[in-house]
Amino acid sequence: MIRAQGLTKTYDGKVAVNGIDFTVEPGRVTGFLGPNGAGKSTTMRMILGLDAPTKGTVSVNGHRYAASPAPLREVGALLEAHAVHPGRSARNHLRWLAASNGIPTTRVGEVLELVGLDSVAAQRAGRFSLGMGQRLGIAAALIGDPPVVMLDEPVNGLDPEGVRWVRSLARQLADDGKTVFVSSHLMSEMALMADHLIVIGRGAILADSPIQEFMAEHASAYVRVKAPQTTDVEALLVGRGLDVTRTDDELRVQGLDAPAIGELIGSHGFLLHELTLVRSSLEDAFMELTADSVEYHARTEVAA
Amino acid sequence: MTTLAAPPTSGSLGRTVRSEWIKVASIRSTWWTTLAMIVLGAGFTTIISGVVAGDIASGKSGDSPGEYITQGLIFSQISAVVIGALVVTSEYGTGLIRATLAATPVRSRVLAAKAIVLSGFLFVVGTVTAFLGYFGGNAFFSNKGIGISLGDEHILRSMFGAGLYMAGLGLLAAAVGLLVRHTAAAISIVLALVFIIGQVVSLIPGTFGEWVMKLMPGNAGPGIVVPVSFGDNMLSPWTGFAVFVGEIALLSLVGFALFQKRDA
Ligand SMILES: Nc1ncnc2c1ncn2[C@@H]1O[C@H](COP(=O)(O)OP(=O)(O)OP(=O)(O)O)[C@@H](O)[C@H]1O
Ligand SMILES: [Mg+2]
Image (cartoon, rainbow over all chains, first blue to last red; front, side, top):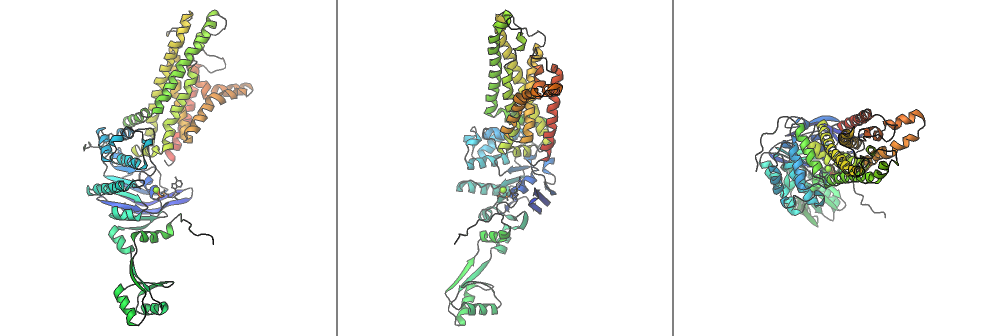
């Protein structure tokens, strides 16, 4: 279990993480979702005691990470920056990690096999592809068979098969009762992997709920109505107490299902050009939720 | 799967030392640099001795073999600096420092382990280099009938002194590495300090300049390496080495304080 209380990090006066509280429970995959620069990696570094919180505390299994005599046996982490020396072989990288925490060397071979790197174990890590590097990072995270596993953007650089592998690995770890904390900036990925979702934007927690609940709450549906007499139709629907938003010649209606809306409009003699049920995707929900908190917007306007 | 035995209940310096040794030993550049240290150090001592042996034997030069029998180690200093700096800075260049501190969060223990591995390794390699140079160079001196015996005054001190000095130099470079966290910068600074600044300060006039020169790490430290001092403007061997150790300690303390405080 991971628990953060009032966790804050400021870099040179710039707030990266702003007084967040959250708990990551065992036995499920908790997704940590947020756009670029939201503070995910910073939060994870604070959990590991690599960066000192400016304010607040964070504990793992009830104590500070640094207080553990053999932390790799308690928490395994894949960090964003590849924390590997390019000149050292995969096996030797895992060997020094094992030695530092009193983990038997036999475990090195096991995790290499587990992540599918056993055939290239003697190769220098600098020669590895992005995906192989990620696998090595995951092997390092699992070396101490820890009850808490934390993965920062684990699917980065993986091919579809690799992505599926990470997904099932996370699932299996959670099913084994472990605490699994996985960050991503892709809602679609989280939807497939996570049981619980913590959404972060500009250093603040925007949502913290089971993924089902999050979907029900945020992935809303509406009915798109296009009718030539837009204004009259809008007045009619609003008159019935429905929730209507107008954009140009299009009405977005909530509060009644599509057939009922169609009948209502028809019964008043208005023409109808389009009647569509639109489900906004989770990705849209995420974009909407974090719209105000995205740090770097792409500029798409073109000079006229 | 191996069921892991119960995790240790306390941290241990021994585990961290083992881990740091695996790191150092599993990088090829360590061994190339070590090879360079031995070959250059022992090789140049041998060559220089061969060149000067005749003149010393004939009495043409007023020098003694002891002034030359560790000469090649001047070049070995470069390797010691490189190995020392890399022990710290290679971790920053690659982001490895985060894995290191995640594995061993007690930062003082990480530094202690690095210092033990580094100084132990350089002591052994430095001493071996000095002995090889002695055997190589002394072959020429013996040939001319002016050979030095290992039992002669200061010879053993200078052999093991070479190990001590190389260990110290490595620690100095590692400490500078903690300050600048950049490989090229750390190596350049220490090499400049030892090879250039240490000589340039002799241009400062008066006794002040003399003292600055004497106290520079690259001048104070190697006094214990040479069995017969080249110049008279140097501190006595052990006094010089004590100054050198003090300088390393001071830099290491500053480095440690920063390491303790800064985010990884
Ligand atoms: N060491 C640092 N020094 C200064 N600023 C930093 C540092 N680390 C992070 N930041 C800033 O803190 C904010 C949060 O960064 P962080 O890397 O935690 O975001 P993230 O959610 O992991 O983003 P991404 O999806 O891009 O990985 C950003 O504005 C970033 O620029
Ligand atoms: Mg990140």
